[in-house]
Length: 112
Image (cartoon, rainbow, N blue to C red; front, top):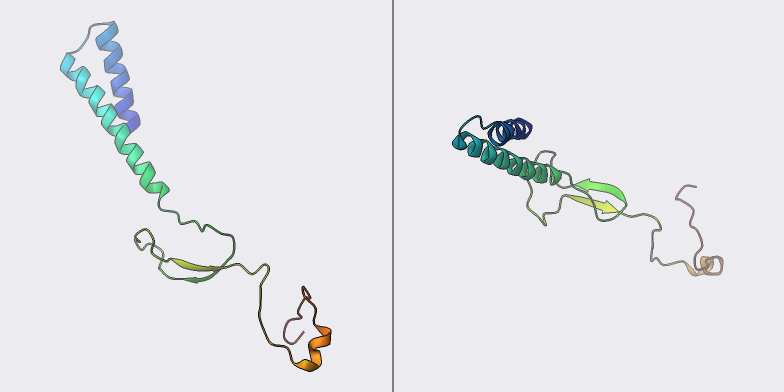
């Protein structure tokens, strides 16, 4: 739509300014229609850009709080993202294993 309005404006402008063909009213209507179509296109492009949700951090999607296609307001929680690299765990260690535990040591997975 914006392309058609721009093309119509370009043709009317050329005809009116160079060849003195057409009325000033048709010239102005084409000009304003082109400007309005361009403004509408800009608004739609901005709205489209706001349809993608991006997380401000890297991580793994733990849970989704909304369904695809739902409209949400700014600030509405949409998902829970966890960053598991590295994972910091605070836990107690039985005294008999205390001598084997060092700061920064890797932990083996349960059952491994």
